[in-house]
Length: 334
Image 1 (cartoon, rainbow, N blue to C red):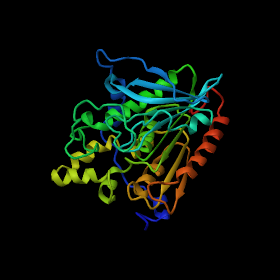
Image 2: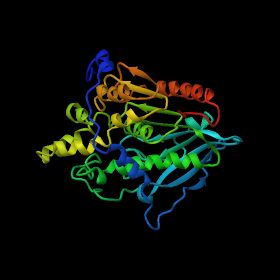
Image 3: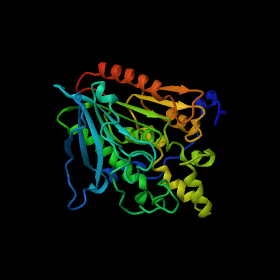
Image 4: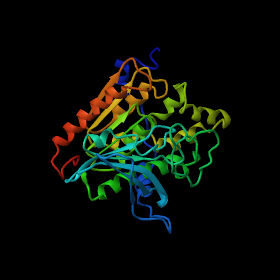
C-alpha cells in the first residue's frame, strides 16, 4: 500500500488556512443551550442488564440528546468499585452501532467507567444501533449521512450528533459513581472527529484521544480521499453543480479541525500514513491546530486500521498516567 498523502515531514508542517465561519461560537452555544422538546425525558435512564459477567456491571443507557430525543448506549463499570470512577466516553466509527452489551470491556476491566454512545441512525456495519435519527434533513440526497440536511448548519445531521455527544459527557458528570473531573473522550475515525468536536465544546475534560479522526479539514478530504465516506460529499456535488461554496460553508461549522482550536484538555492522537479513508494530512490539520497539550502516535505503514491493539496499549498507559497526575476535583481544569 503506497503513501496515501503527503510525507510525514510535510504533514507535521501542514497548516492550511481554514477560515472560521461567521458566528461559529454563537451557533454552538445556542445549539447546546436549546431547551428539550415538550414531552421529552430530561434525565438519563440506566437499566442494569445481565450479560453473564461477574466482574463488570453493564447498564442499558438512554440519554436525552438533541431535542431531547433518546440516545442509547452501554455503560460498563467495574464491579465492586467503592470510590468515584474515572470515565471514558467513546464515540463510534462511521456505520457502527453500540453492538451487544458484552462486546467492549477493556476500559471497565482497567478500572474505569466506560460509556459507549450509539450514533443516531447508524449501525449497519456491526451488530447494530438502537437510536433513530429524526429532524430536519434526516432523509439526505445521496446514500449515507454526510449530506443529510447539508443545506444549512441548522439542519445538518452532525449538529444533532455533536449535541448528543456533549449530552453524554454531561450525563456522566452527573452520575453519582463517576468523578466529573476525570472524564476522557475518545473514538476511532468518525468517533475521533466527534471526540475532537466535544473537546472544543466542553470545558474541563481530563483528556481527549482521537484515533485516525474523520471530519477534519473536510474540504481537503472531499477532494483527495478515494474511499467513502468523504466521497459522499463529492457525489453530492457531482449532482448539485454550483453548490460547493454553500456546502463547505455548512461543513465548516462541523469541521473537527475548527473545534480543535477551542480545545484545552491534553490529547493523544493517532494517525496512519497509508490511510486512504482519512488522509493523514486531514488528521494532521486537526493535530497541528489543536490548542491544548498534545502528543501523537504515527503508524507509518498502516491504513485506516491505524495502530489497532498496539495503540490500545498506548492509550491504557496514557490514561493511567493522566489520572495518576490529576488529583480528584482538578483534572483537566485550566
